[in-house]
Image 1 (cartoon, rainbow, N blue to C red):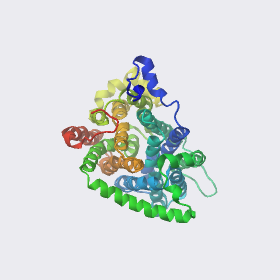
Image 2 (cartoon, rainbow, N blue to C red):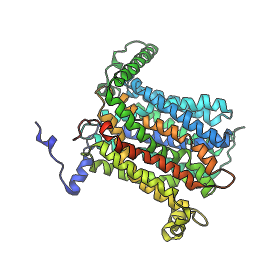
Image 3 (cartoon, helix red, strand yellow):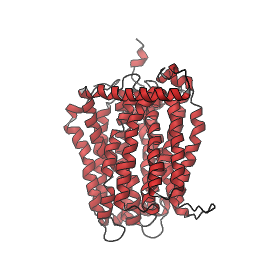
Image 4 (cartoon, rainbow, N blue to C red):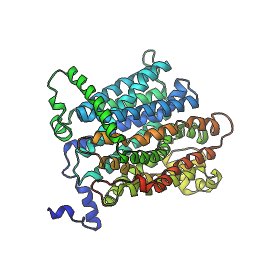
Length: 486
């Protein structure tokens, strides 16, 4: 037995750096996966931040209708398609699914840019976009596991999560910048609104993905994932037909097997509780933009505010991954969920408690130097910064390990299928955040008296369900993790 495999890493700074050095010999496909992750999530995040405003301002939907469409139609549809996409990926391979997903997203985004009819925009833009985004989601997780070695796994998952936040970071700045420009562009008879202009930016990132995906080596993918695609020697259309049939059979077989195992139900309960944390994460896109405009001022720089989360995650997630790779994922998830839930209660505190902080040198720097505000700094800017800072620490702990927890228990050859299950928390979170439109209308209406603290108290209580449930049901939920000590 190789003694080096079981040796403890060297201590001190050298040992810490050595944890990252395992990526030095990583395959080219892993680095390309990181780049694809950045491009996909930048395009996705720009769209996500714009969606509720586009639905209300451009298509005329109310707060409630816009919230229901993103929370109960667009977002859950993407999650459901993600669950189905896992088996499709296992059946036909990573590279091909990447191309199909990007092609669908390109067409869908183009429709959303030009469509003004609500039915056309939803049926030919939003719904196909959910399909295209879903096709890329489990592929990225599967590629991270497949293209990394066992020694690289924890660092690779932490880095890809950090890269996702680089995409969120870029999207936040793009969102604020395009809105602040307030451009009035006329191309023929077409005058795109600021929200359609933001969709144009997303489309640009989507187009760049085509040459990047091209450089994924097909032979490396087939060896790494499956040899099933190599057995298809007939026409492309026959391959597609066989893939659909095989994928349907894979989905039925997968869930038939899982539903006969008690561990599957434990995993579902685990993901249910994580969903309450994901609802808080999702409200940054689906609730926070309108909250900012109505409470902190029109065109409030909510993108830069949310970028606080991304800045912290970018640097903290890999460090946390390096320092905690020998600790079981479940334990880290519990600790992180406690920190996240506690952070949301900051937003439920009385705003006048933070007036002094807003007028302090730190508050003035945040408002006038970082956010580039003019005039006084609203206390909710300080509250948001504190909340997002604490939340980010908890997220750096728990979120990458949720994905790894699902991937770690996946049998060989079913990486994408099991990775896709890790998105069940997003389904729960999206269903919960679908109520955000009603909360906005009730506590932060566009016109009338606003009670933002009560809205945030509801969000905080919902977030607290996660750590309480994970602790109470720990003896039932927790399952062994491959490669982890008990």
